[in-house]
Amino acid sequence: MGSDSQTFSKVLIVIGLLAIDAVWIALTDFRFDVQSALKVIAVTMFCSVVAFIYRTKRPMRTFEVVCTETTILLSFTAAASVLSYLVTSLDRPLIDAELIGLDAKIGFDWLAYVAYVSERPLLGLVYSVAYLTILAQVALAIIVLGLVGRIERTQQFVAAVMLGALVCIFVSAILPSAGALATLRPSEALWGIQRPVVDLAYKQTFYDLRSGFARFISLDSMRGVIAFPSYHGTLSGLLILAFLDIPYWFWAVSMLNMLILFATPIEGGHHLTDVIAGVVVAFGSWYVAGLFYKSPTAPLTKRAFETPAVPA
Image 1 (cartoon, rainbow, N blue to C red):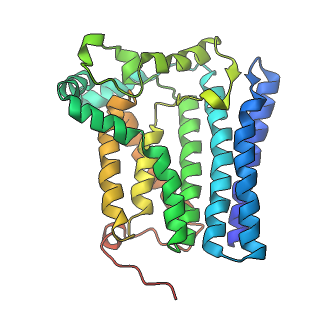
Image 2 (cartoon, rainbow, N blue to C red):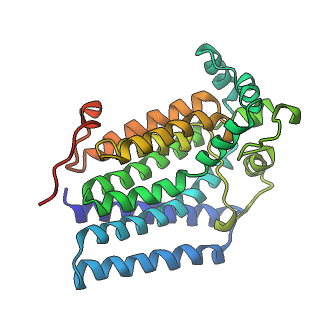
C-alpha cells in the first residue's frame, strides 16, 4: 500500500469518527460546543497548508510528513476524545471488582502502593511531572522521527497511536472501569502532601456521563475517562517502540516512559491491570500498524542496539 493510500485511510478514519460523533450527538440529548472546535480547526488547517507547500512548492518530504501526520493526529484526537465521552454514557456494568481481583493475583495492592509513594513526596512529585509529559512526548516523537528521516516510522507511530486509541475506546465501551482510585476511594490522609494528577473530582466526569448528568461536550475541558485499558500505558509503550533503534533517544525515552508506567496507577488512579492491558494494546497496535509500512517491527531487542544507516 502506498504512502498516499495510507494517509487517505487515516483521513477516512477521522471522517468516520466525526460522522459517528455527529450522528450520536444529534440522536441523543448531548450538546457539543462548536466554538471549542475552532482552535483545532485553525491549527489543522495551518498544518495542512504548510504540508501542501512543502509537498508541491518547496518539496521537503520530511517536513511535509511531520505536518501531515500532525494534522491527522490532531483531528483524530479531537474526534476520538468526543467518542470516549459518548461510549462512557452507555453506562454498562463496571468491571472494577474483577480488575482488583486480577491485581491481587499478581500480588499488587493499590492502597499499599499509594501509601508507599505518599511516604516519599519527592517520588510522588517525580511521578506527577513524568505523567504530565505524555502528550508532549507524542508531539515531539512526530517531529523527531520525521526530521531524522524516519518517514515510515513516523507514519507507523501515528497509525499505531490511532489504532491504540480506538481499541481502548472500544474495550472501555464494552468493559468499562472507574479505576482503582474511584473504586477504592482512599481517605484524604493517605495521600500526604503530594497530590496525584487525577483525583476524585477529576473522576466525577466519568460518573456524570454514566448517570446522564453531563451532556455538554467541549474540547476546551476534555478529561480522560477511559481506565481500562490505560491509554497512558498504551502511549508509553508506543513511544518506547517508536524510538527502539534511534541512537541516544531510545534510552532517554525508555527510562522516562518506564517511569510513567510505574506512575500511572498513582497519577491516573488506575489498577495495575489497566496499565498492563494498555501496554499489550501498544504492542498489538504497533505490530498491526507495521504491516502497512516497510519499517520492520522485529526483532525488537536486537534493533535497540543497532546503529541505523545514514540516509543517502
